[in-house]
Image (tube, rainbow, N blue to C red; front, top):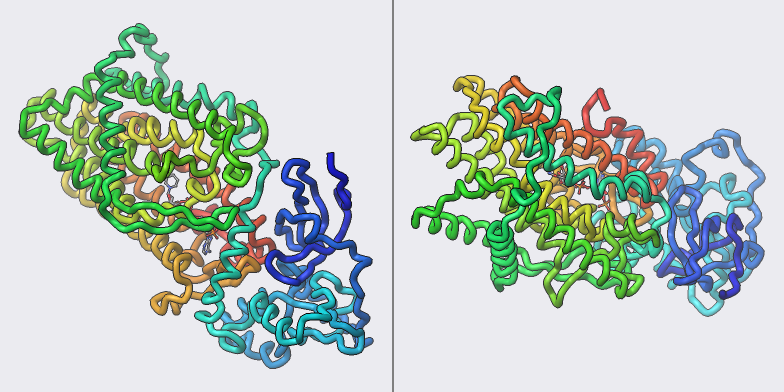
Length: 610
Ligand code: NDP
């Protein structure tokens, strides 16, 4: 076991990655395998550093205050202390900008989140601060220091400061200039994900994930069984379990495999652009082909051809449970394969959220971040193709089954609404396929049972519950009611789409002139947090839109039973939990800047409620 120089809890100086800047940090743990220290900055930001990037505090010269005036008002300003990752600054032009703060809210926001830099130069006499922080706040402050740079000319130090100091946009740097320093941002984005060991377990830890492996499939089968009942009241005793042999049919499994590999074939087609994902912990960027929408169009053509040749899509309805079992078996086999192959993956390719060292936990959450066979990305493929497109095909099968069973020449209005709304949702996801590359599923969660089961079983078989319900429980709705539900869905969709686009466009190109009207809080990672527009309305406007749509999908099923409302109830729980997870990650990533964002935008999903 290697000797470690610094103990847990020790307060030391940690180099800000890629720079010569050192900040005061506290050692929280040490990883024997990767030989990395996890350190915590004053604002809560956590990073992993090599030993060579850590110095003891005594190796730094502490600068004495040049002014004895430490006005209480200045010293007590909480904003002027411990800003991410170092101290805050009021900026070189504090006094002048103070007056402007009241005039221009945007400037205020940016000003508040400046990084302050203390500079120690070769001699104490030469010491000066580059951001012009009033002396009174400098006293005894070693939270951010540049080591003596005898060999480096001042210009070099200036350059570094320019790169790391997020200064007021109009006063010192234009937004474009800030964001054109790609190299630095990429380095920082990369570092924030370098988290070899998962220390905080989610989903109830080992016990919780173990239970979920059984609970999730059981829920799917319970819902499907209940949906088949004449009286699907959840107050009723669950129906008897069907005979085991009735749940399995080799032909059905064969069709499922055919479907999966047909989608895989479409994924491999060399059509559509190739884009890069966000940088990984090793600095690499994976390439992804964006052809989901083409895959959908080709699938629609294939299904159309089958229908033309009198293929009975109703087969799907008749063997629905067997298809669900086939998909569940397949997802389990896939998860086992994923876990086994992840054992050989290099540490840097493991998921920040699924590397706890506990088998059950890592199996469930996904051990490897981006498992690939050659250039075939298994997670990316499963996220949007077999399950999502499969969902639309299942809905269509339900629509045809309804017409056939009830001898209708036209599908019911309820069925049309459910099919139409969910088709729009799927087409939207495929049309905006690129947006998935910045989601938590791709950047944080590994590919394990959770996503494999979620993508291949939960999405197609639970999300189609309303259509499945309507086949056995016809529900008539009037045109005005249908119009009101459609309006609700449109409102939800508008919020969902515009919120997601706003954030995605901002993340892809923060200097986009079309987004110039938006205000944002800069953070130490180089990424900004939007505080106006949709992201200034609530902290997860996209979830709000998604939930409104979910309600609109259930309403066509009437109010006789709660079963078709399972989706919206589950979805609220899912997104509230997801929001809490995301909040936790963002707090770690952005520290005080995130807290400031939360102050500015107090509601998480539902304005004035939650
Ligand atoms: P989000 O798209 O909500 O992204 C969250 C991330 O956005 C944060 O981690 C942060 O990442 C960034 N962010 C947060 N606040 C701001 C801000 N103020 N300004 C700029 N960036 C900010 O994540 P999800 O992956 O959870 O959701 C994506 C979509 O998928 C949503 O519409 C959701 O409703 C939908 N969804 C649907 C599901 C379904 O089953 N139908 C399941 C789950 C999600 P960073 O700063 O690192 O960029």
